[in-house]
Length: 592
Image 1: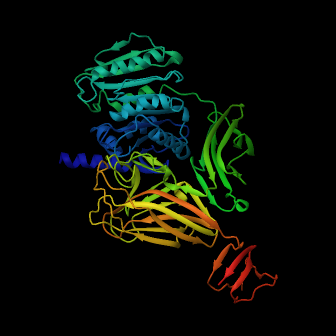
Image 2 (image 1 turned 180 degrees about the vertical axis):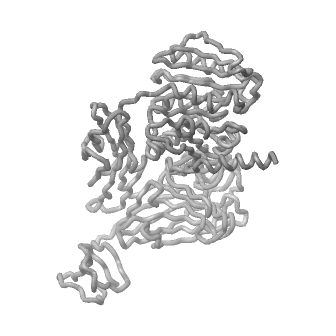
């Protein structure tokens, strides 16, 4: 009976929160969010990160619950939003920006969805989540009002960057922790006690809340901040959830007293995404790039946004005085462009956001140049293995489609893009370059092209064929195709030695200027795979006839007011046209 009651309690917890996701850096990230009914506007947000090998559901429904207390109950009483995010492979990036960007994106989404108060956003985490919390203190102190690490600290030693504002910290830790030793807590806190200008001697409350615990407080520091340590006698590596000392309540009661008091406007660039590439193969006289629409989000915590200005480098493109905030970059030159958006509020305060995008006009493009980071998906690429789709730059993968770095003493590639087909159906395992969600457009003018590549198998001792296609981006129609069966299999271990790979060549003609996709498919076998490397695309020559497209089907102009077809003498075509050259909507069309 007790097991049934516990199950129902857990089920209630699961159903009371909403599982949601967001795309960050081309990667789909998930989280659980709970918002009380009748939340109201400008309410706080608490983000709490799970430990290694855990996930959001475990943290929310096991670590933050007992028979009488839950985090949802704390939220319902205090009226704030709580988010439990999921790390990649149940881990957190505690040295880079991958998960920092995830947290930033969650804050932005909660602001849009629940109108949370950006001045009162709080971050905490358990174990590795606590380590990540310390990492975030140096990375996003301007976004988080107070921090609450639990049973975790930087194992290599804490640091406090000189330019970081004084920040409030509540650290909770058990003295019996056998994974993150309690002896390491004080050295980590000392760094921040000193940085915050707090007294070096703490005031101590023993028998805290009538519990076998001590609350250490170093205060006041600069700007009134505090550093606190809740020491739990004999507690191990877990979250304390007793009624007298319930971790969720302790975190909320500490954090709720602090606010950023931000006055500057917030601004971010929604599109285009950072690192976007626009590639155009064309004769010099015909080189051009598509118009790029820049969309920004802007808000002000204590007033209104008066204007949003859009820049290409130092050149002002447009100014918007009301939402939607967007502008268009036209007739861009080849090279890297820094797009900047500046928001100005009614107090004259400003804030800005930037993204870099690139326009390229190559004769030869080394498409595989971005295969230079193991366990990442390169910008420009999208992969699918019949179960999971990955798009654009993202990293931190330990399985599935990703770049592999090879370390054997003799190897045919240093890096290669691994992709697979799990279910074995035709065209259900692939890697594609140039799809809309990959972060790159590939425009090809009429002409003759050569694509070179190397391919092998990863874990197919009997080998599996690889199909290479050039496809139209608009409808996926193939204009060139080649099938190759590799003769090298690496053997499912990146440290294995393997022979040099044979260079493969695919020559093809483009007859219609359009956006195209390089598509590589693994074999129609269950768990077939491919390693792709050293991929280049060269324009050998361009069509000098001036013909923009070739059609073998009959044109029909009857009833189409927007389609005008004329012959070269300027006469409007009849319903059925003979073979020859015609002008269609201002372009030369070869009918054959």
